Image (cartoon, rainbow, N blue to C red; front, side, top):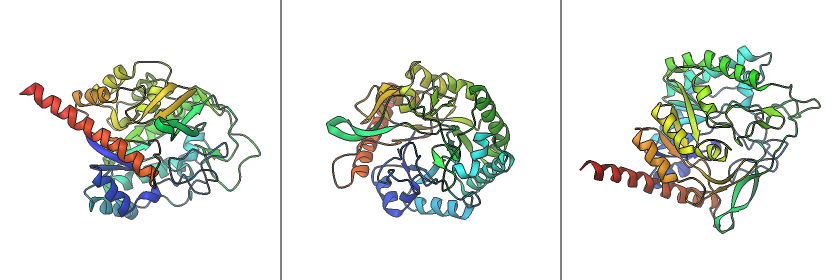
Length: 362
């Protein structure tokens, strides 16, 4: 198991690479989508939350991430002893009609294939994705964590319809509406996902890249009047069963899974780890279940995080665990302090479990 850190696009610089290395990280999961582009109330100081207007403006539909840029990020991170373990999330501008089953679906599938090939050529082995119409929506921010630290949560269902011109909680153009996103049934959304996997997994395998699916966040059956896919932990198995490809894996978000209303998180973690289907892990703790939950410090929620590390270790999980996001601490550098606290806990957990294994074999 490797300790990693997730960085947003505007954080892909030497200062943040040094911070990750100083905290003991070996790898990075990077975001290339600019969630903060014209985001209004959404600020770049922490994770994106936004409001019903979405996170911000999606990228340029005609400019895919270039191989030279990917190689440059790999090289700059490598100068600090860090590997790029994954990219997280496609830009809606590049694949919106895959999600919507729109008229440019064939073109957008080719966009995804091109991105995957460029990742493979640059040596980036994993693409995390969230197959969702509404995306990460309906969350609120408040002083929810220990000591009044600022964190994110949910205070009830959010079913305000998504306007036309918005998908995955981002605007595709300057304006949205006046119509609404076309309706979609759960069965239709699963069919769209199957089409996506059928088209892209062979390219991913050939490129040495795995696809890792994030569960729904927040994990509700519907958000903003749109269906969801993986809002209970057993539904991850349905996704796995869509394709036997070794490139069909999971972006295993502990926080989202703990927020689900059914299932035993530890039993499901054992199951998916034993199958070798976990691509990488979002190591995040929470209290409560949807539709009302709050994010916490990593040591202070409903999940026994050390027990999770033991399960992953026992099943020979060799991937990366990252703090995903963390409560903001009261100081001059709230993001850095929150991440440093989480990374310190995680590094200690990894060392503890490794020592336990040595003591039982000697």
